[in-house]
Image 1 (cartoon, rainbow, N blue to C red):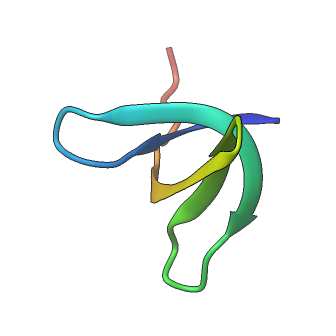
Image 2: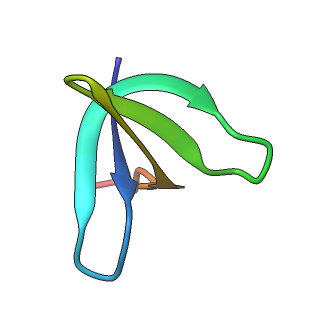
Length: 45
């Protein structure tokens, strides 16, 4: 499942969901690299 996370004020990453960390951040994998950041929250249209 693809997830989008925010790494900074202007940087976001979309990758395959790995797991949710204990502090609420989400870990995603892009190729061989893994990134941890805050998840993007879905909003109603």
